Length: 260
Image (cartoon, rainbow, N blue to C red; front, side, top):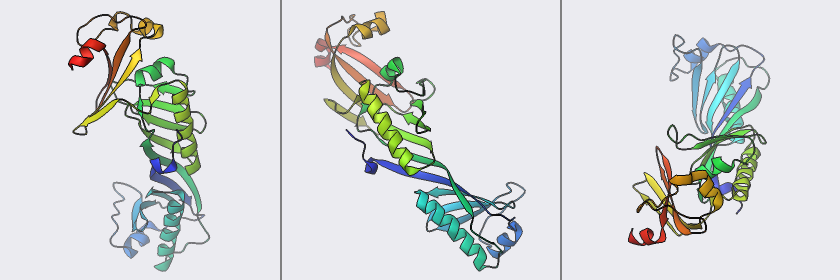
């Protein structure tokens, strides 16, 4: 299953711009009385636009930082609009600013649940992977190419940060999806899925106990309800539970599953 662009949303684009001259921040603050400029707290002046809805920080050095845009094009358009508005009130600005995209934040879904425990056990996705469910419910994955960082949740939701181009976001998400499918930790469909008040997402999957699972869990591989030790080759129900503060995988023998 290929991840479509419509399933990934750009949430924020951070861009910087440089003028080859200093900016008179005090004069800008006087020309735009609605701006909140408190140099004793922060040296930058926040210049907000309603369309596109962005906030651009202006500094005496001539540096600008734009946040809040939903695309590269929108970020560049916002910076150029700020420059035009400054010129309109008499602020001297020569030439065009040098604009660079510094960070793109995107979120979306891979269209299925992810077994984070199995992901960490197999860990053949390339790059570096860290998962500490007691501290944070998502796995943190640093992809090498494109160079981005993912937050991966067991519900299939993801957050991608660090991209410099929009196409890098879509390429990175597709690479991630393909790698998760290759190691069989992305489950596109489950027999049963339900949510309770937006706090918990649960899914069931019928599996056959493999030797690798027995080796990894050892004596802990028991039926959650009756406590019986599960054997290699036995069909059992695997239960994923994803909460805001923890993730959990339990196993139930067929007899106990029918009694739930």
